Length: 414
Image (cartoon, rainbow, N blue to C red; front, side, top):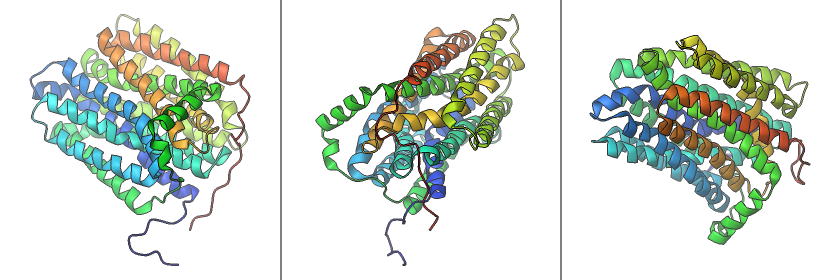
């Protein structure tokens, strides 16, 4: 039967949900990483210092993290699709504002609003998955989403570095605007509504009650801290790496972008390995392998960066192993965090994302306070990695909550 003009898309298959999910979830991380090679040039362009330019990164995190607590309950109340569209329009408008910013103060404000606008991507994409799938089907989609969230931010600096070399720092903001418009168009055309709308969930007391109920669930809290430690370490790394590679090691923006391909390679190999191994073993059983990689890489990072003369190999080698290990952690633990909450998936996804982005915000802010980027990397990345391991050791002892089904099938493509 033909859809009426202006009607929303029909039922969502696993393939369609994956395509929409990876695009929505990747918007924020890619927008953050695409911009990093331009940071030293922005310092010169606005005749300022590193501190306010770093704030354009820190406040993007702040907007991204804080808005998570709003967009999840909003998607439970008015629906996944309207929430995604509202926040994407905000992202597009903020991207225009950043591109036209006359001063670093205006750029900081625009980047904060960009972070708010990108926030719905992660919450809505994960809520859609929880609406429709469970168990291994959910993990497959989360694996692909995690792959894009790892590959996208790692590949983005390469693209940003090339754009910077060819057309100046404003070109990175043009690319963000184009990405926002493409994501908005995809949601408009392809995303069907998957949630059950309930306006009562937007009442302050209802929101508070939902979050309180979720935070009383140790299964969620421990899984969320695993995600927060893992993602927080990754975003802290991307915040300080430009100043290490282009400052301490003396490389230019293009070289920095190409070096970030190391992270892409690590995460891609990890995700593809996980996909192959998960045909024979549960994704949950492979999480310890990823955490073991984090232990080894953190130790190597501490040892290598205490050497008198750090090199590209001593910096990027441990980071390659760390991102490889992350690929084994993120899909299973994301599914675990959302599994107990089929009726409040938006709120649960928002809170999980808040923990992740909050750790990233704390890491980038702490790096700014420490000042020396090498010292910040040596202290913060291992600290977050070991926090994730401690949380996982507690999580694995907890019983699976009622309703956290481990089976799920995908509807066929229309």
